[in-house]
Image 1 (cartoon, rainbow, N blue to C red):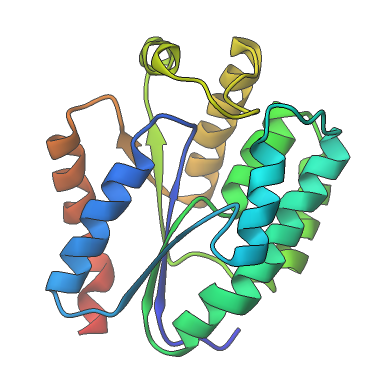
Image 2: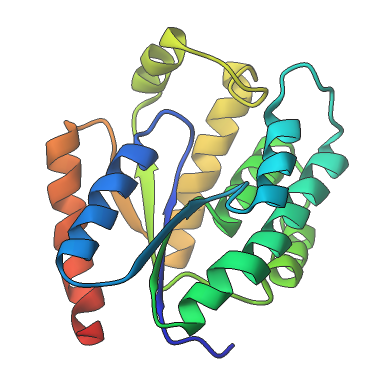
Length: 207
């Protein structure tokens, strides 16, 4: 795939601080003089955000297959309309969640075949892969503490067993892909410094 920019993804379960750290990361990159696009999945474009709203609405009962296909539809629109054009323009794209999340949630969480999800991921993304991935991980006790404060969307309302399967999926996928594992249970300032330390050599060639 022809692209000139650099694609960074932040992966991990809910409540691990991805959005907070993505904000720090974007500001840091902009200070270095890079043109940065900050986005998320599902979502990132008006149509994809509409799909996100439907997917996460706790009033909806969604089958596992319908859920998977909606995530992939959102991704196809997102990549084609926003991510790929930004990369081709030489920009850095920072995205909260991408294909790894679909494998973790719909594969490990829902029990759908990983091989089939991988095929759909490739189709929806056009084969696009991140240049650098951070996977946010923390002990389940910390997940429980953070989730007890606020549960708002359909996936956050899933039982603990589902969350544990998703967490296991992320850990296995991180090891398999060579992603950078981030201890999200540490203070935000320490997490930020760790991410920036791993980022520096990865983007050094872009200057």
